[in-house]
Length: 342
Image (cartoon, rainbow, N blue to C red; front, side, top):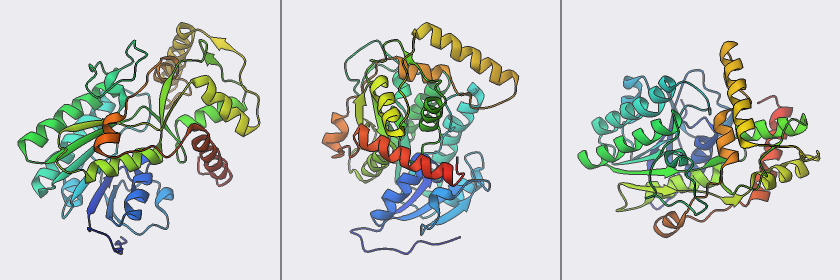
């Protein structure tokens, strides 16, 4: 166990990061360390520590199902950032609810016992579902969460607001759409490998308008939410940029120096294909199918987020446009493949 050496800062905040070894969580650890926080990460004994190598922080062993480890991790903490979640876009309802809902309840209970004053929850735009609107979606938009993952996140949010009211805890939630960027081991590898193998195609015209976040922007928004005063019980949308799947894929292809796809398939055709791929993976007992119905929904529907609330209340300003984000992602992916990290 390595303990943080404090740097001069306007205040010394002690933060617990759940999911700190993962994609968004490791960027949040970087963000907090840069701002002078004392950081503790709860990790599983089997967690890959690559993203945290060389960083001065404290780690403790446990997980969201081990209440004893959660109570220990929450001791002497000023703010909990709950970024841990089931790290895939496909799975059973039971799996998603055990981690995303019941795990969140275990963590909230541990915070109550330790009198942790602040709790920031990494939620998802999946709580909105995929509504038939071309207008940017604000935080008050009706909630029609996607099955399993979206439902588990929405139920966890409802629990969060309840705990905030009942236990005098300042709580907030950050809702992000598709997240990519350096250290993304889900979406970026899928796009890159499919492009390199010439297996990628556009859903419909490919001109659907979608919001996308860079993981580093999400991390900064999480920190800002944890520092906001008198904003308890608030949810905030976050994003880095808006684009179309076609523009996104063409920029990946350009920077990878491979041909962009020329094939188009209808939404229905692609959705049915994804269902077939999921069924095959299930029969073979494998995880993380390369094409899922969730990916089809994300890339096949127009869904834009309105982030004016985060801009006004948190002073959140995105730092990464689509070109710089994709360039950094490819550079990280290339280095990771060379180092056999993916």
